[in-house]
Length: 176
Image (cartoon, rainbow, N blue to C red; front, side):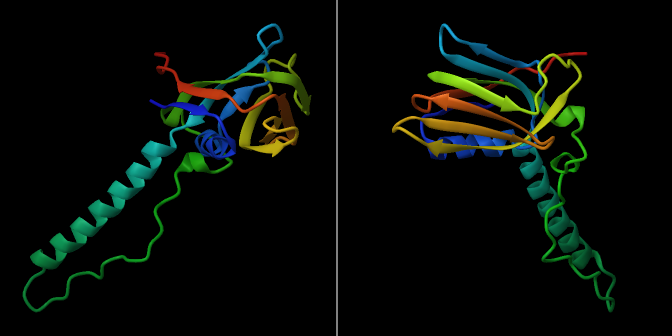
């Protein structure tokens, strides 16, 4: 389970990696003006598990090729080992969607938020699903700036912040 904190632009890039292809409903955003917070509830793809699975798959493939070479009958060549093959791209890494098992519920909170601007997001439309492609920071008045969220659905969100201070925390998966 991830528990991360962002205090600078580099930390936000780490957030962006872990939140790539995360899904959320337009209604799953909350601005708390009195405490100057902005909170998002998302379902992120488990990139760590996908990378580990791809690496384990390559190790297993190399191991089975070695076993085939050892067990090949005398006078016969073992099947050629597959090399230079890229790890399989997880199905969920495509824009087509994610599998339920690969998703992790996560909460992301941004502090010191001065203003929020969005486009293409209908917070009243309960069924609108957004797919996060990434986030970035544009410095303005140091240490502040604009944190921008880009969604696949031609939608976006901008948080004007005094400074970067954010937390990302995985939540336990809900049992169905």
